[in-house]
Image (cartoon, rainbow, N blue to C red; front, side, top):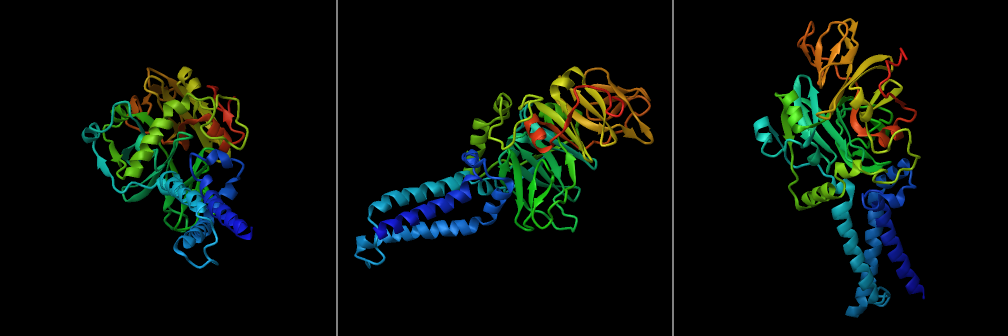
Length: 423
């Protein structure tokens, strides 16, 4: 009887330790541990190697206890019936396969290589309606295919000698460009760890920091509370992006290994954006109550300046394609081109003036102060300010409402009202 109890303890401890280290970090099992807090998930990840060691040692001991009697080994070691092999070995194989195919910190690995292609070359591998994440920074314009970035959830890039991390969470449709440097100059080497309330958490093995994507700051680790410098990216169709930015190039990093190709195919089959957007609820369970002021899976532009946040629903922008507002004391304008499903948020300050915009022809806006005509990308096409460029305001471009509301609690919603300081 004692030997049976020992065998049960070894099996339970071995499988239990491995499952604890796995369940919160696999997209297939995450809903089973929705009761875990973010801090608890981080704690499990920190002790993952200890849990792996416990699991491997316990299951290996059980296998040895079952094997030794088959070879007339010492009875004090061989104290498990051979039937334990039938249970333990398939369990080890299934867990090994699960870690190989579904353990996010391993599966969501960065691409091993990439190329930067021009428009003509990119047309060979990007369909006109392919969605890209577009970044304009320091006079450089670059596009990142969304379907390719959806698997690792980030690309490491460099623009004009400056390191840039392009982040994307498919469950929230949230994209942003971060500068992976801490204030002390330390370089972050971020990896996708898991998701909390459907939003990606990154981990840096170099510094021990953890970053929540939609918080854009270190949520745990030596530099907790530090906010990363970030730049907004634009969700757009490839044909529209290259029309607005004929000088763009493309960061192309297709999956190469068998596992990467399998995971990429699974993501595009199981949770393509069209399928996510058609749902009534998020793909995974969330711990908090979903804000019902807007449909959970509707798209919004989210702006945060200082302590104030505001959401601009795409449905409202379809009817009112230009919205002037003030957020955190900063005058901003939201431009949206419904025909091409592209929009951006800009500061209304230019030189010493604050401009007020109104919708003009499709995809353009005209300011009341100088009568200049502006494109949806914030460039003055004609008028007194021809050639000038509006500065992008900090924002998240067309993400799901549930995620913005979950991480920006108390956010205001603007359905096309006048500026906040004039309402």
